[in-house]
Every structure is written in structure tokens, then in C-alpha cells.
Length: 135
Image (cartoon, rainbow, N blue to C red; front, side, top):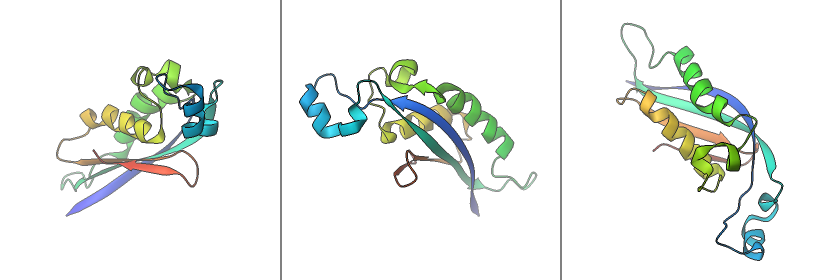
């Protein structure tokens, strides 16, 4: 029997959606307000879920305290109150869209999770706009 366990976290970060290979007009047309040269920020809600078999000894799919610590160290400490474009190495050459942020988070956490378990990242950029990535 597979069960999904989840942990929610929150972080705040600034970013600018911009392609340096496009001119200002095309960046403005495609990214609009999100192309602000002075950046803009979001209060991101993150839900990280791990799906797997329940360990018969512990009763856990995964210890949520351990998941909490992984998220704190490998996601929140790296992204919270940062300018994603300038402060986070993964975004030096990657546009920090919600989609790309979710993939970066998944890639940071995947090596830390038991390979037998599935990992899912849901990232809310606003209360109504969110992305889901499962690898």
C-alpha cells in the first residue's frame, strides 16, 4: 500500500523573467510586469510530497521531521529572501519561472529521498497560480 506524506513550507524571493537574447520589446511582450528590471517578489508556498510504502517498523513513509530539515537546508536556506536571478547558482542561466523553480527544488531534494519513493513538488507563486513537478 502506497501513501503520500507532505510537508508545507513558505519562502519569499525576488526574480525577473527575462531572456538576454531577446530585445526589450519582446521581453516586455512575453513577460509583462514580471520583466521589471528592478525585479519583483513573491511569497511562495511550497508543498513537498513523498509517496511510498509504509515502513512496518516505524509506521512512516518518511519521517516528516527529516523531510522538514531537508527542505529547510536545501531549499529555504538557499532561496528565502534571495534574488533568484543573482543569488542562486541554478538561475544564473535559467529563467526563474515557477516551472523552473519547481524543477530546481525537485533536483535539490531528489538525491536525498529514498530512491524507492516518489517525490512531488507543488509550488504556489500566487494563491491561484501554481505548478506541480514529479520528475
